[in-house]
Length: 415
Image 1: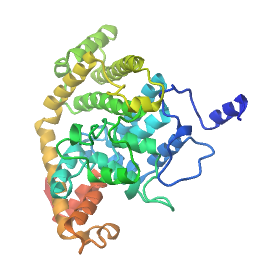
Image 2: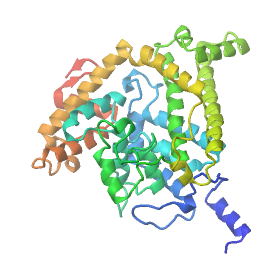
Image 3: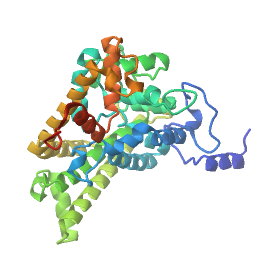
């Protein structure tokens, strides 16, 4: 038996912190699809986090759009900066709730790996192109990346992440099946993506249960980051101003508070202070609300969280309404702005053109992607093309489009 001093040394060595009984314990991980020797210096979830950070898909996030295309300016968020902000918030929430911070961080860092170039516009376009072949879902694409498409390691494809990280990536929005095994939530109408079902058949992820509390705080951190940074980027772009922001009562109150404490603050500092306080208030609300839900549930293990009837991480009712108010403002003033809609139309055209071109001429893709597709069935060809396009950065997609068509929609120029 390990004595207390030896246990303490082990925990210091792998960087462990105090965890609540309902937190996921890396020492009790359900393991990896392909067994590996444990690390002498890192917990299982620290190892997952490091593999995600060193992946090719993670690096590409630096040049993938959030709302504004790359050529609009250097100060707008990319998928990478958004991801880093989500990870910071997720760690803060996990620490306050006694969860495993490393698992929460790993999930936050990986949650957007499956996104296409050009943000949600790119996903919508690719999904439509793939309609006859099972569609395109960025959540399923993330799973394909970390289990198949990354090719860095000698003994396996993908990143060979732990079961807990994979379940969190797949189920971060809640159960995908009901108790009768029928698709639920966002998958009710179209069904669970084939990639997820195929992987689940090999390595069951308990699709009818909630994911861990760590996955749940990573998801709510994503919501908080979106609200805050789209306010910031919307203001930088000139699409939001003080008057627009005051359409949301919560933001108006924060602006009044800031102006009373620091009058005559220059506009950039005022917005930065507003964003900082938005994040703080939302994080504080999630901590209070989640602690209350945990108190009612009284979970004694991570499996008690998974078996619960509802999520334990979330906003209180007033902040749920505030979140909706902010999203309605952003939708009205930013996402549906004429200039943004024009950028969306250009991006949509680029991805549709690329898909159509590669479908008719797969040999125009790099050899590792196009090889063997000339005689492949349509579904296999389409999925390989979707994998290739989804992995592109905004810049690469635009450059490939210009090379293949002689047109550059982003600049309005013809080659």
